[in-house]
Image (cartoon, rainbow, N blue to C red):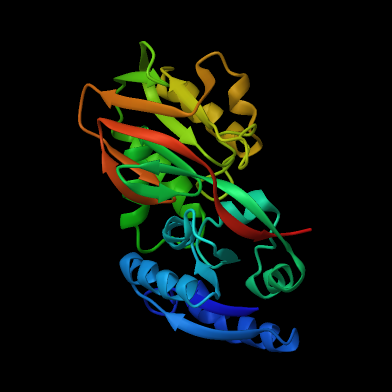
Length: 290
């Protein structure tokens, strides 16, 4: 097996860049054939993934969930395999799959794991691996992405707190599998392919990566102080027990809102509302722990 290690070193030498020498040593210890392909953009990463797939190599995404999602989207329905080395701030895809969050340790999965066909999500023609969300999450993601002084997954909590200060409830319209529209007033509408986002927030704790469905999480209106008090419960997935949180399942949903929002997935903006989000069953083969 030959590995094409697609690496986003990060500005100023990010986590993947700092961990790369150790990862290379671990790959050599396991006698794995590899080459390193450095990229600074998701479009370039997609092109590198296409080249790897055409050559019959395993495309290993070494970076954050955005990079992993970009590479996975290229491998959609191809006879190709995706490897995952967590090197970002959140690393929620690896967390959900049980892949070690220390990149050097995760090399053991590349060497001894098994291949599973997993679902992807798609919105606006872009594939994603994790959770696509909008509303309050749009503001929180934007703030987190603009933050420069806060390191690691704390940036997502920072983004949420900053977004809450100026948040005003909005009205969403959600259509499930082409049926009647459902109206919801509140904070967030999310279409979850996976369980977690935001560095360990288990927004959709019952979501499965291989069921061909999206878990649709709607966070309805509560006063800001109550929202703030309930926010920590998402780190254990217990927020779904609250009466203002509803969870549905669908193959496809359409989301619109009374004011403009950007849909974010895997930490990056991927579409503007109104938007259609759908599940892509068994779309990508991934090396996962045995």
